[in-house]
Image (cartoon, rainbow, N blue to C red):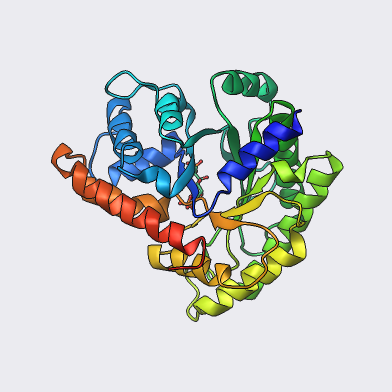
Length: 331
Ligand code: 5MM
């Protein structure tokens, strides 16, 4: 592990006023996205859509790094350039999602555990040799009747820490993503309690495995009411409870925080981030690593039709620049 390489990469990822673009939808997720616009889910259409995203003019003014799915990381664009090399050439760090997905957790109905540790060290050294600068692993925590269990939280956070340690051994910055799902009718207080339990466990496990925090980026969900809750907390409450939770659970040494959008509307995702960044003296850089809150409107506008590419790219750039402004509190 070379700490200087990790720090340099993490600082580039956290450069103001930029954030990280998540475009690493796994096979089942990209299938859903393309189905939503009636476009066949095949390799060529996945390439066309992702090429639209990365060739958006001026994207690198708002985006420091892009998280790719394995297929995209090794895929060529229509002119034969590898996606990862194109991103590098326009000043966007290429990263890769390395988990193998959230699977049903044995003997724990309704809960998931993320898999992918077997053989991960060898995969990581290959990704680094090919030019990856950072990685991502997502753990999923579900709120419901008597869940999440301690077993689910602990198993997922230990896997995140083992992944992070392997990344750093290969000079790759780990993005650790413990997502507390927004699905359900739970209150913001319940989300707060579960997010705190998850983050405390995550940082205990990172500490136990000697993960180097200045070379680690946290990708958390916000503390927010469940989507089906009938009296959802307002924006200022979401921002202040999220910030308090992070201040209590995230060591200051952590390289930075980049939120996921997790099913929030575009407007919610940017407003919450903007309010958080209007607070004085944050101990870490706080930015975004959104997928849906950057891509959703552009995907709908594209609809699989090449004639709509320019318009969709304008929409994508508008979303990315609003998130960029929110990342420095100037929305
Ligand atoms: C792009 O989606 C990522 C991969 O998820 P799947 O394994 O379910 O396909 C996901 O980790 C994403 O990076 C985060 O959830 C952030 O995306 P949102 O849409 O929540 O901002």
